Every structure is written in C-alpha cells, then in structure tokens.
Image (cartoon, rainbow, N blue to C red; front, side, top):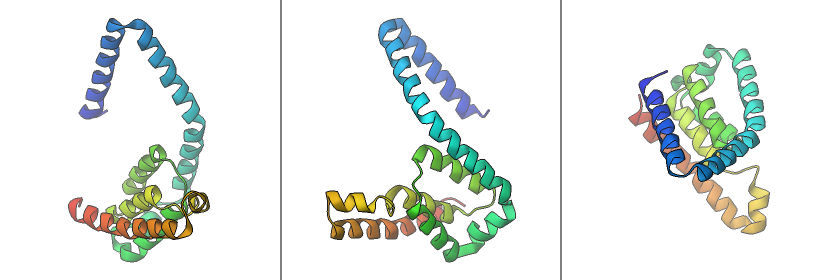
Length: 161
C-alpha cells in the first residue's frame, strides 16, 4: 500500500472516530446508508470486475499495446472512442479498467479518449435522450462531446508522458 492510500485510510478512520464522538446515532445511520449503497453497487461491480479479469486473461499486454498503445496513433484512438461511445460502464468501474489497460501497455491518449467518450457520449442512451430533448440537440451534444474527447486526449497525451 502506498503512502497516499494509507493517508486516506487514516483520515477516513479519524473522521469516523470524530463523527462517532460527536453523535453516535447519526454516525450509525450514516454507516447503515453507506453499507446499503455498497451492497447495491457490489453485484454490478463484481460482474464487471470479473469480465475485466477474463478480458485481461485473454488479451496479452502485447495485444493491448498493439491495438491501444501509443504507437497505434489515431487508429487506436478511433477504436477506443467508438468502444467508449457505445459502452455503458459506470465511472467507478471505468477508471480501474483504464488503469489496468494502462498497466498492460495502452497509451494515455487512447485511454483518455476512451474514458472521455465513455462518460460524455451516449450512443446507447441516445433514444431516451431524444425523448426528453429532441433529435437535433442529442446529435449536437453527442457530436460535440465526441470531438471534445479527442481534444482531451491530445492534452492528456502532452501532459502525461
């Protein structure tokens, strides 16, 4: 465990002790709410983690770096953007997945465009969005989000090396 993670655990534990000292009833209620949230997220999180584990079993670091590595250039970014645009993964799963892909040799710009399109472009949710807004606004929002994802990827590629 690194120092930063340890510091976060210490701060969280100190906050919990402080909260319990101030008001035990509210602290117990907050812990019950937190446990309920955790148990609601756990099944989905477990399935996605299992799928990521299975995927990383079959995809070697060489394959990932070839398809999504820095050398894959714009083609890797386009592939990552298409996958990100059509995939519906919650953020709490997407970021650990991105870290795993980076560890396996994916490039920073490719993962940045993947995460950006995943969070901002909603191909799967577009029909619902069209019902609430309209087709024109949905297309404009998704198109601008898609384009902006490449700007984010370019900046991330320059900042993080």
